Length: 111
Image (cartoon, rainbow, N blue to C red):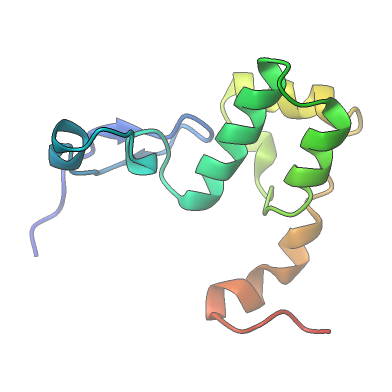
């Protein structure tokens, strides 16, 4: 398979990735693939967007973000990093980072 051309950059971490734009032209909604490189980053993007728009409180944003994998947040784009730091004054603890090996293996979380 030929190497795919990088044509998008993640709005959260800045990583370059390839995404097909034909769906964006044919559908009436924006695919997460046009905004971020992963579904997890799209969820983070949406929470940060809602927090910045004052549609949710910092407490609500923190509760939602604590359910996601925030590992590597220090390498996120400056805007995402600043917003995370305003929600978590001491920086996100990334509690789900401890679950990452199970998640990547597709196994259910340990009890």
